[in-house]
Image 1 (cartoon, rainbow, N blue to C red):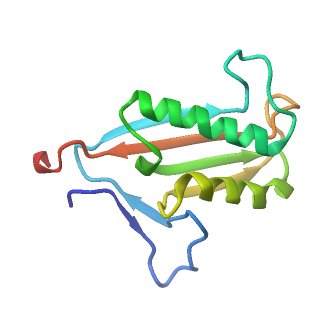
Image 2 (spheres, rainbow, N blue to C red):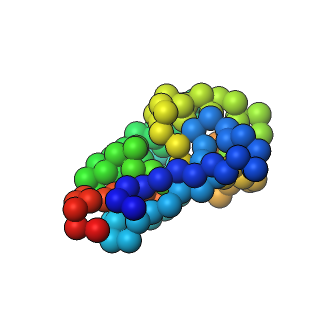
Length: 136
């Protein structure tokens, strides 16, 4: 195996949009673990009051963190979304599709009270990249 492979066994329910039941990462791939990101602006004080604004900012922060490691959204293998309300899930899926397109990653969505009352979303992620498939 020389690349990261999404796996969706046919005996399990059909995968959701932007979702894989499992993702296999080959040995010696670089792995990046990303802490929960929220919708604060870069000043660490202000944030949009609406879900879409916060979610898009989280994706921008995620892109920045990935880029710093020489990775991109296509290198995401696992996403864990924490939503303040289940009512935000449809919008969350649409924003996820805007950023992932046809890419598939493992995904979990948890609805719960977040650390700060104004937070509507927090996202934790894992990315992996095979820099030199010939080296595997």
